[in-house]
Image (cartoon, rainbow, N blue to C red; front, side, top):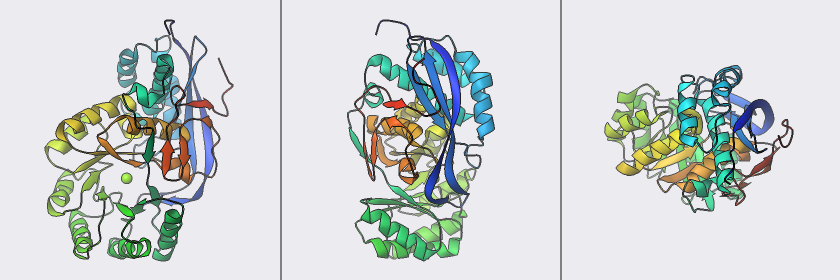
Length: 367
Ligand code: MG
């Protein structure tokens, strides 16, 4: 554009959207998406948007901590910086406060939104991608078997070809859960199993090999054991044929390097809320690509702003072979204007600039 785009203001807001059905995993139950929103305003009158969910049981971030990190630490460090100085902004963002990855992710995606706008392109094209459409799975919450079967059948009837089955709450019953769902949806639907750290290493090996021996194909098994049980992840990965995906075990690029080198898993689940945004997610993609380790891009309970940022990343990088970006599909309503089109399993990228989100309730339009 040739003119400067200096950050003049970083504002926070809040969104509360009820879920269609309660989201239940081995770790928690949630009934609505209640996230912190961010708007960065530049001196040429442009807005960039971000969002962060308070996923206390995974990231340690709460609504209060996200707001405080942004308002008291991040905003004072970034105000006055030029969007064109993307690398400089990211160094400041990383150093002005430790941890707080969700707050950083919300600000990082708003900065990338503005950076892509300055390039006059959609974000995924600025990141070097050309995939205009990606496919997401849909999460099936952990419940009693009949409810999980009907939720799975409903998802398939709505066009989802990949289901992410939450288990890990009652290990003895999980084999039956997965077997029953496979039988109900047939062999053509891909099943991704997420135990959310709910199994011991020995339980995980027993459950996965039992299912393998029954001829039940699983696309992957995600985070079978505790996030901190690195030896346990290695133990399971070495003993089963089904690919093991690390989620809660990998936050940073450093975590990813260790995991890859020590074979703690076969696949890596990248989430912006763990990495602290797109800048660090790109580092994991680069390392993973170097080693040929395929990645999934996932989301927490996020509405369309944060999931759009993740979708732009997924559309940009070939090493990201799987998307778990069902946040908007779980929400009862979409309060925003613009952005990628989320239609069931299909996410069609916007060709408008940046993330494509043009209106966010709660923030006045323009400067
Ligand atoms: Mg997971």
